[in-house]
Length: 221
Image (cartoon, rainbow, N blue to C red; front, side):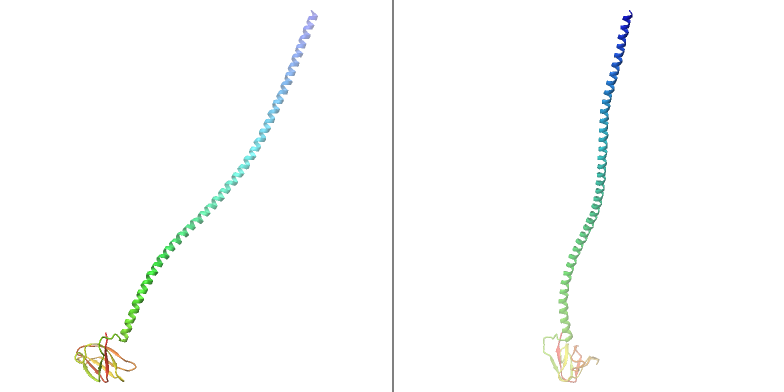
């Protein structure tokens, strides 16, 4: 009985030891597996951290590039605005030039018109100057022969026709009078004198011509 009990105790001890060994081995095996798993997770975590760091660095670089690009865009927008102002000023200048061209064409037309008017006026002036010169010189002679008078008195309308005459001396010259019916002298001059020379007058019917020397009456208009 004692031997049997002793064997039973030995088996129980063995079982107990075996169980403990199994538990120890299981624990060791579990611990080892856990370390392996933890190692793999650690490796994976380190890789993730490195990837995150690299991504953050790339993101930071991209942000810097984006900031630089935004600054360049702002600079280009400022340059574009400046160029637009230049274009606006150029367009305004072109508009002013077009207006000046139109004004120039208008002025040229006005100048040409005025030149035509001036030419016409020059022609009129020339004609009037010739007419005035003829009137001043009394050379617009009528058709008809000059009338020569000797010294004496003559009645206009009886001895000579009424009209306009230029009286000029024949010879040295003398006093020359034209009087109306009341005796009033409408002409009192000296023909042939250096100061007086010829004289043009209107002779009306009834007036009297008096000359102290021969004269010539030239009909004029």
